[in-house]
Image (tube, rainbow over all chains, first blue to last red):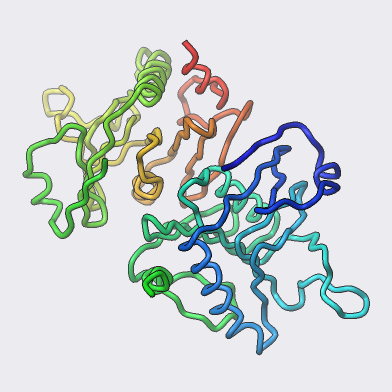
Length: 184
Length: 184
């Protein structure tokens, strides 16, 4: 599902029309995201809602699904990008910007069955190297979550382990709770 | 290819007869390794040879394929375990021990197409937490290598990037060189 076209520049890539699913540019390569399927979509929407339910009313942060973020020579589209309230790019009018030319504070990826693990981890490590405080890589098939901290330190969590949350967001979640969303 | 049997103890697991491919015990769960295939076997043998060619004559280290290592409440069988010469378990006679009840200094895993990435990364993180200085997780399909350093810090390497080697072993390898072994 991932097509790779080599040797273009970021500027050239950004001039191309958007694709569906979104295409990404990292390490000089373009690849197209997988078409999201049931598990992926459900975790994505539930997690956005869980984060925004607590972080939005208090103006602490906002979670965006499928938002293009351009920074560090790459143009990526994490499954969920969480920005602290004061870091959300704004127009001079105060309105939200259309182009996000900075890193998310918390980046979340959900691995799809046909997706290359290496590409997805690379995205989260790129984020970590450029200022992102927290990364999650969710493995629905294996029911575990790889968490990525500053300096590219990682920890694999499973079962009743409590998940790290972007600081100041009043949310408590275990790995089990995230995967329980898949049971309707 | 991975069968999981829950709720046994390490002592019980170690009394079971060995299986082929080997079974492993980690986080209270037993799983059986995948049957190695062409790419996996070739990288495994070439890498053991490359390490031993330089590290064995100088009595610096030895690389072992498929060696059971029991430590930290787990019994794992990395695809390659490299032990510094002075840390190779020995009988009082000086002969090599049959049971290795310690961590390897350098652990290497090669991901097979049917293998769970999470389980394999978990093994390497378990090693890192218990004293292993260096881990490699080789992705033959994606031609990149995830390297694991102390404190569970990771780095993904690709192309002409030079690979970190266990210190004092006089070996220089790029990611490309490792995957060039697959072209006969």
